[in-house]
Length: 296
Image (tube, rainbow, N blue to C red):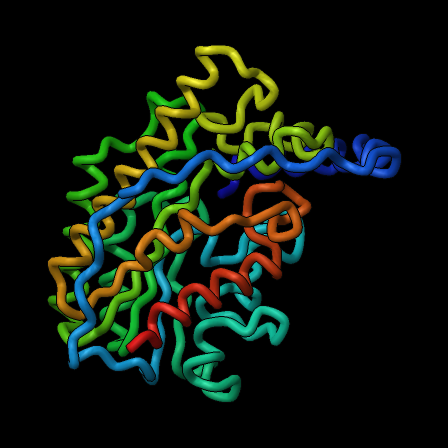
């Protein structure tokens, strides 16, 4: 999710050098406990039908920078070879590698995600995916809709729903038999809880990473807490939309909130921005997806 590449690149490099000393002289406090997960973050996905094929022969991935593995390998750059969905890096063991085998990934998978994309961009991505006639389409999008400079800029839930419904319709027009795996939007408040106590992480976040949630990370006042709650509530609402729209399609499987509920720690985050998944984090996303897709 780039935030003004040239200015951000300069600032991040400067911050990384400045906080290196901090990283060397402090062991880093324990992360704060994760915020409680609501009992119902989204409607359940449909019961798998006999039509579902747990061994699809081709995979197209749509979404945002999480699927492009942004900042997983180098500063302010996509690293598609490390993508959880279609990457070829053996350390990640991507979903495509697990399903297709390493030798078949290049000719039978397509990473059509775009860093910075919001849900409004998904219909066009789905049209491109449909043109490849994949047997499986993975969807991971929505974090950018919540990660705006302020909560006022977040995508309205109704708009989020319309765009996702339009995206599914575009896919069905071009690839009516394609299966769809939909990942939930990560819990951004959990991200704040995980990194807020670290001087290193805070210094990077100050550069403008996901301001709606991560601005002023040490501020525990009522206004700041209300802001974070509003963002988390919006993510929960987005996930409900993903689950409900997916449930209306018999060839769609929602992850049941697995990504939202995953208790990641700093080791799974990029050390460039402490926001995107590291290679290890990408591997965990691949594992979650594979488990859901191959479930009987």
